[in-house]
Image (cartoon, rainbow over the protein chains, first blue to last red):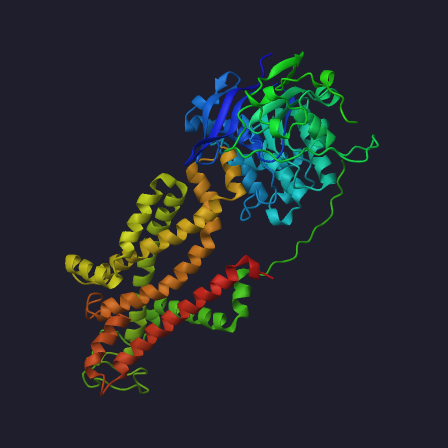
Length: 330
Length: 287
């Protein structure tokens, strides 16, 4: 079956006095139907810009410079602005990191859900939309939905607001939900509830989810497939199980090494040295090379291509598969 | 996951009006504003005499029990003329503020939302701002002839750039907020987004400015009428009344002083109210 969403060679740049600065630089991805693709990476690696590029909501002075975003074969980058508006919230919906500020403080939550529905359905009566909005609140497990309908955002907790955001996003039964760090701003217990809810809703509706996060724990919990992003590029891509079992890119190794685990006794966590290079001063070769403990001279000359190192497992590293050549610090 | 439904009683937030009335100056100014508006609306029923009826046996009478505020140079009852004059003055202010406000806010929102035309619209506003309102009033009066219409047009045009600037800067802040991005991601159209999300969240600074501006507009309108560009005799208008009395300033000062005090009180009340409203609408002061 063809994937629901295919991203090919996507490049998103920001215009500056010194020329175009890439935020997303030649990304290829596929989101399978009914599955969850996790995109993981540090702050500033381009994962949010990638999702905004799919929605064509890159803030100025940024723009998508090259590539294709195919939703069921239709290139979203070719659509008119009106056509794109129908896609947003209709076929592809998005939820954001900050549930505290993503709702308009002056309107009751129910009205805001109705507005999200109204954007894609101009015919339904208000009464009908109201019933559907209450059903939507009910679907995201908000207790006493009919009464909550008239409450204002400030009367709800962060977790409840994120549920409202999810209800709004799912109001028009999208095929794809892009969740940009949906749980980062929430308590750990609430986080688990929201992730469970997303999984349940996925099982109910069969939608695909793109889950953007910097937490590998969330990926392990949710994702079927994972893409690791670094400095605007995909460093490694595989199924979630495979990625955790045998990471191939030194960056992924570093990420996994910096997560505290209960089932291991380690004295110290492995931290990745240094910081992400700023997008206006990227190395010519592999972008991870300056921080990579395994770097060779060859890493500096040209960026390594994303190559299949095992069936369905891609890594952009000339030394992959990495275990063969190295004794990894335990 | 099972959720038990518990009754949550949100702490009642004091309303804007309640916060407003906490401040004595605000309470007084609000009372004055309400009374002034009521007096203007009810002028035909409140006025003891016809404002145009002359009593040549009682010209330039100082206040007494028959004519509570005295009579003017033509023996017309000052109280009745004040009530009807208030009407014209307030209507002039409201009309020019309304026209200037709607156009100015639309211009400001357009500049903030469609950044492409931002530069053009704001330079236009700068040009409009560089004309003094009085000078503009003179020009309009020269074209259309003096009268209330000329004053309304002049004051509306003078209000547009100010409103546009306030609306634009407020809108720019609101447009940067997360719920605007969320609305875009829901595929909401421009018109709906501006109406549903931008307008209500920009309302309070605009409302505060409008209240303060109302005082200024009345003052400017009265000034234009005083100069003879606005309301023409026999129409009663506070600025024009003050002007008509200035010939008799030394032996019947009440003819000029009473309308002048009227203007002073109205303008002061709107200014104090505007300041108080700004404080009351500031969410940080909501305790």
